[in-house]
Length: 257
Image (tube, rainbow, N blue to C red; front, side):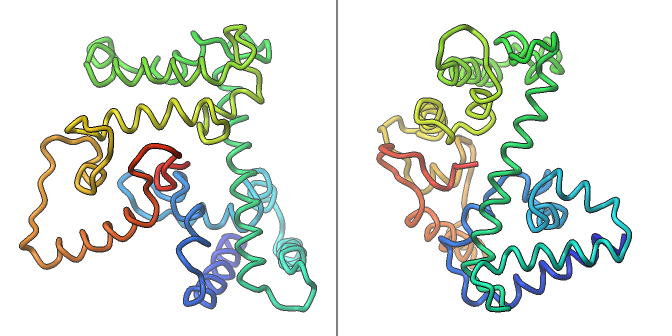
């Protein structure tokens, strides 16, 4: 327990000291990474712990260290993060370290999923294995729902876009692109087209602010007269205007994994 608390305290210390200086662009990738939040939207401090330590495997190894070893490992990480070796971890250095950690976490998570999906252990994931891994847990009635059917079709399209050699199976490298479609232009394009198709409620080929906020929910309603909701909408509008490419020419940053 002391290992985790120590890391979280150090991470929080850096975050607090840098918070006033970090701009939105600096933290965007870190803050919108899916694993950064638990189901329900609550912040997951374990993700910060993993990111600071340098990835999933590094965090697992750290958990088995005794306290003296853990302190030594933390010192090594801080020394590594201090790229210019001036004895101070600067904002740019911490952001660079976290970005590299996110890339490692992305790859590690994809590799874990690949191994789970590869049922016949031939080091390839077929489309059948991929669909079974993602939808096999569902009951028949759930699979028959229109929204689920549409998403299953989309998942199949992402698979085919990731399958560069068109052999009907994904290698480990190809699987990275179904795990995170922004890893290739082909899968990113398919993902963007699906997102716009779902969110573009009036089918005008662009995403308005309220469509983006509704996330494709036709019944979503917002009370513009309520002060708290108006403040929330103003904050979200700023994110929308800064991050989202409403024309669909590029992958919206807000939708990147």
